[in-house]
Length: 511
Ligand code: STR
Image (cartoon, rainbow, N blue to C red; front, top):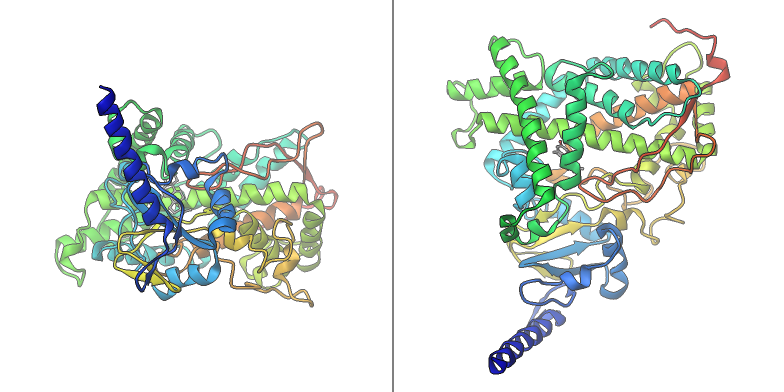
């Protein structure tokens, strides 16, 4: 027995030494690999990552020891972390196609029926085709048309009515903001909207939270898929939430199929159905090998819906949290609105060109609290390189957007919320004062909803601040600014008093 134990110990130590020796060296002949954290067989570098910090902060801190580009092993996967904009731009833009892959994980496979969506699906001709189609459908029903401005303004108006009904009662704005942005994507995807307290909306809120809490956050099952065989509370929540989402999506699909004439395209669901029909009839130039199944339609709509709701509402919550911490910024936005929009009309999208400070404040929110601090992981589709370092095929590449947005070489006092950094000395807007700002990612995987999100954030915020001043209720603490890491950087709940501004009490605008 003791001999066996001794042998086992010896074997483990030898394996440990070998792997430590291998990972500790950076170069193999001419080939230079990024510096690596120590790693052990099977578990990889887990012991060196088991820090109490959330990953974006941990990865940012590890730069001090390993430099801005380093690697580690997550179980059996080789992961490279990018922490500066030069390398990030090389991965996303210059070599976008080489790094366009996505890892398959247990949780994202459950969410997307093995990668039949857009965000988490690996690179393939079928993925490229779906993405293109959704992009044109989004353009058709939103971006670039007056229709979208009308839809967002209708929701902004309804949101302001709710705020007004609360008067001086403290309110958790999160569900109201979520309903407002949900109704925008709902209009685009299904041509419907939810009233306050709608049962279907409550179901959606619940399953969405279940998904955000459990998906794609590098939990142990994603690192060691074999752990699926054990009972796992998170996976149960994810499966239940996905089942609830699928039921809702399926109902929508059925309603659309029943009503679809084959010609009139009212929303995104119709557009996808039409593409599927033309493919089946083989009367278009859609490639045959791309497979647009019902699953693809459901998962794609699920993506657009989930992304449209979770991301935009999160930015709005961060914006409100920061405005409570920095009332002077709120005041400056209101002064700009008063001076440039006035009291006889509501803000319009065309005001984005003149409301420089408001736009700068939005950019600053996106910088200081990026919705997706690690973006979504990329995978090298072939042997490639970043700077002077070799990156082998199948390496996972994580872009630490947090590091880019808090890089002291690029930003003065990066932890300070200061919209002025997005303005020049004459108060004109600087779209990006430096290269280290990529809130929507970049390249072939860039966020599909960037334009839509920017329109929504601008209109919702400007409508709210034109009429209300947001304050912390007496006795409540200021909102937490750390957030909770997950597939989006979530905002912890807090309450607000939305006080109607004096000047607006007697004004009624007819639209
Ligand atoms: C939110 C919850 C949900 O119901 C569905 C999805 C699928 C798409 C996800 C979304 C999620 C979270 C935010 C993501 C988005 C795709 C792109 C977006 C990850 C999990 C970001 O990259 C921030």
